[in-house]
Image 1 (cartoon, one colour):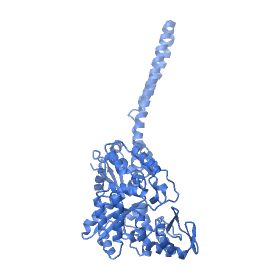
Image 2 (image 1 turned 90 degrees about the horizontal axis):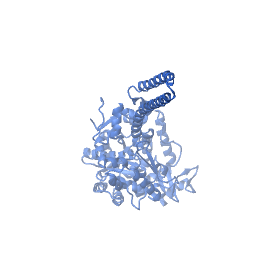
Image 3 (image 1 turned 120 degrees about the vertical axis):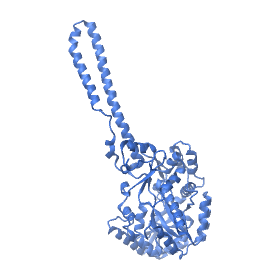
Image 4 (image 1 turned 135 degrees about the horizontal axis):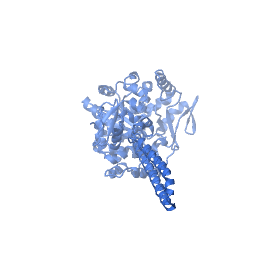
Length: 543
């Protein structure tokens, strides 16, 4: 029996835009078919004509990754970036506590797998995996927590960080974050692998949210050559895009609106509105806020400046400007030779709206390749599925639909009724004989009443135990079913959007990620359901 099988994205509730994208029905909104790997190689050959700050990238990335403890494979890939035949398979995510949901790991895994496949295909070109840690983001409420699996509802572990406008790149791993780290360590199962997982997770004293996040990724993918970066390392190289945005933000807003209209015409909800705005944030006094625009002026932090002065402020304060989510992909592809971006469903929706934006800035749009999508199943969950006859697709449905799969013990109605009938017959017969017994004398009647009362009480107790045992058997089944759904579809969401990887690494070892990588080598056209324990394979389709 197999360790992994697939189900359709429809089964896990993926959006129509995402499933249509997989089916090729949005081809005109993207740079090409991502599943034809020759398209990635062809784009790389086109990008060879463009200039990138390769030597400067090498210097910045080598120093940063080496400081975070990068392995030899990563440092070799960084060295390759200086060469004009090297290109980037990029992915990214905000720096969440403990790497956040499982999909972060699946992004990095897909990125490294695809880079190897493209390098093998191209022959004379090299592709390296880069993880863009979006640490300039300031929505700490999205980054300050992690969910750990339990036998029931997952446990939420939260660092006491609130939204104050502070970018994650400046948030230190202080006592608030370390308290969450300690709680996370305590929540990880005590196994033979726990010591290794704690070593993987432990921050350094000088870490910020961004460096801690990337440090974990580098430790986890030490042999796969993953390169990590934070925007602050290379912000100056994005100045041409930012300057163009500050000079033409009305036009870029129109292009974003055109993308929104194109999606709305097909019945999709756009990710970005088309309202006129500068698609940048400004950082002042450690707080990141959107640049507010008016007729002839803008608000930068607490100051009002004329619109024509915006580019001057950029020249003077490069480190204070950062792109929003709609402009970030343009900045990425202007700095790095990105042929491919590995995206989750939400990011696919972003890029579906950005074709016009890429054209406006003269930056080639990368191919958008979907990340692997996986549900991890433990042996106890698989056994419960087999016991109650649950199909894989059932894992992503409302559990109430499957409670009738819990069989109550056979004869569960008949046995209590038989005991009830016995109790009633006993009382009837005892009452009928009582006058004759009382006629035999007071002493005899007293013994008779005492013994028959005890028998009646014992029959009541038997009835209670039998019905209790029946209810308990049904209750155990219901609890087993609930655990199945808490594991596969926690909080009514796909597991990959909730659970953290560290729980699974503690139970099954870091080698689990390597065996999982073998299961997601192919094009991610469907959602993978994977058994983390080789001793508990998934049931066959016809089982």
